[in-house]
Length: 233
Length: 233
DNA sequence: AAATAATTATGTTATAGAGCACAAAGGTAA
DNA sequence: TTACCTTTGTGCTCTATAACATAATTATTT
Image (cartoon, rainbow over all chains, first blue to last red; front, side, top):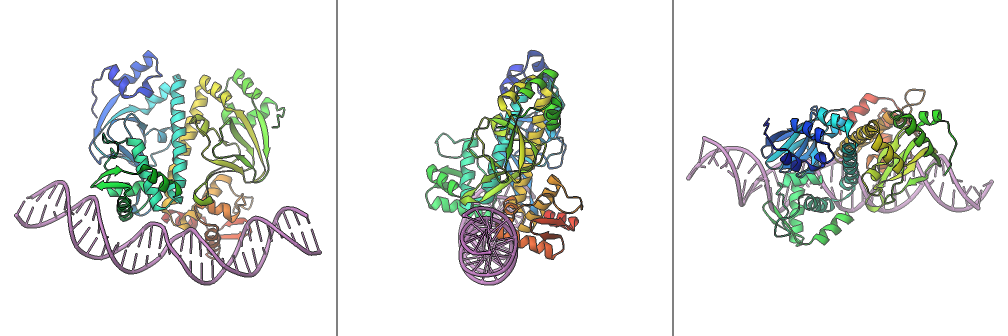
């Protein structure tokens, strides 16, 4: 664990949502409990079944939260972009992790021990409201996702995943290339399908001129059509 | 809307989790904002897209939270038993309902305007922690559910639903009959399958002496076997 | 009580998508 | 360079489950 000396300004910029509601003394306290950790590409951040210890905030990089399902098939539950918090749910629920997390690409993560967060929460309602809002949003997304993954057909699921990646990580300067380069396998795990079907459906989309593919680079050409496919399932 | 005069004791017994953390003046305030509403069997409590106004606590009866999916297929997301709170997530997420709620059987529900809850939340951290814990638990369940519904086979999904109903609503005095009598359609919507497949799989379970069925009455005979089927998918 | 509608049951058919096999391409290591 | 592994791509087969059709029951309404 790297314990880097950071100025309070640097910390404030790293974790604005958490920092902003705090009083001066609470900020001091948080600065004492702030550590930085780096993870290599594809490195596991935490595993299913482990006991949660820290709140994590992704400072840079991209992270997947996933779950090993039946027969080794893994399902990506959600993805984290920078400035997003994760790994706290299980602690609040007083249980172990039901998901695992791994780095899509090299990551810098800020860790804050959950007991420190609990102390701040007991003192600061605005902070509590931040978590209530965040958990509520995530629960709504999860409910939507359950229905989408179970009821939509392969094309609809893949289309939705592509739009979801666009909304989460955005596009490159050309305004059409997805800013995340996933393996076909990750794309399949995100869309609840086999790798072969992700490959096949992706090339179908390319043939239909909805996207172009160049290795792992995906350009969205016809977003409207993608939305339509996602909608009708 | 029935505005029944209740004693504070009666209220306290109805909504213990919400009541217990409050101070005397907060309890007074809550008692002023407490209304009771009754719903008939199968009546809709709220719809997808509506704006959330009240926190609801189920005082008696059974409720399903569901979502209309692709092609009119509906998916039961979770079920509520008495003393459980619901309908608050969307308000906290500052959006409209993404799910609908309906009564499985006649229900009595306590409604508290969300702005009143917000006021109490701002004053009372323990109350905030209650919601953080509850949302965290529900999010974990939802994540588990996503994988179970997408990856398990029909038998596994139905077995899981039966165990889930047992855990939620319990058994009758005979220690084996499920305390909830669902239609095959509801059972199917809970297990992400068609009604015909719910019927078929249910009678298969009966043939295999895992359960007995008498109309909508389901007796669990071999819980261990059910757990095994649920586990292997 | 008769009529109508809803639910449960069962058989048959059709198909989406998994599973598998294998080849080609690209990466990494020795 | 050669060897080896991982990822991507394509074709073929098989099966779980949806979709449909039609009774048989059971509720509900008139």
